Image 1: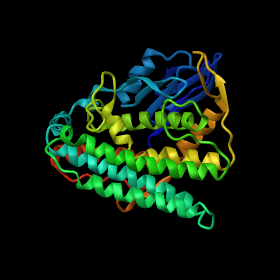
Image 2: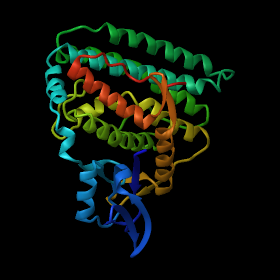
Image 3: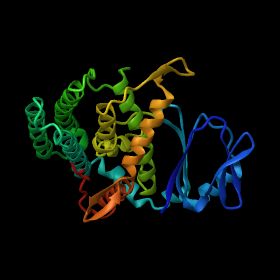
Image 4: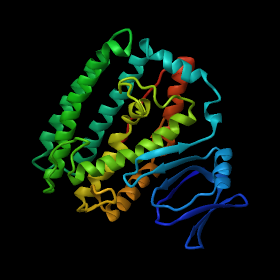
Length: 340
């Protein structure tokens, strides 16, 4: 099975020896990996050097190389041009913005997202059925079901005409979801002001970090499926914004990021913060390492999907390919729904 390799140690240098990737620190070999087994290589800006010959071998192998900062935000991705060798899916993706396909895909993505939010709350409700908060949590999920129905009822000729309707219903559902998360965390004595990417409380910083990890995995899947990362539908166009990645990752946020983070916090982990090199305050290295381990474990866990058990990271790729088929051949796209 092809694998993902994360290199995030200070001063780690990457070299090619024969057909292997060799990691060295202070001149000593630390690890070796067969290049042909690597699907994705994620390199932190804490690392040292990477040889050009290794980059060439990785690209020829089809390995995607993602360079990320300390917040796991990718600032560059290298991949073979062969991933864009077939243009039909991208052409139809761009055309789909101007017809009903953009609406159909957006509705399915956001319906799956809200259902996965409901299933995340149900997952935590299983062990809280006898607690006073149980009825309140159930109430929030009932409100969310109402907004799923509203999303499904939206009709129009293009996404531009109905974007505000779809986004409004999703936003109302999100308010109930994050209220439920707040109730779950408060039951453990944890203060959570609500979800906002710009807030500097530990819970929001943990979510931001988790979403950055997910974003690079979804980007990788979309590129491999031959789709355009920037041509989104309900995330509006903006220079430098990978709008379609943001669209697709909505499906997976609740089950791959929110669930492990809520679990980690409710089990007693207290995230730490520290001042970073750029002068900003962010999660400390111990918390980042633990978060990365939890989310990667979740990505490696298996769930039933279309009658078979797959790793969640494989399901992300299958969903991207299914979207490409939706655009190329008109086959219906069905969003992944998590177990609870």
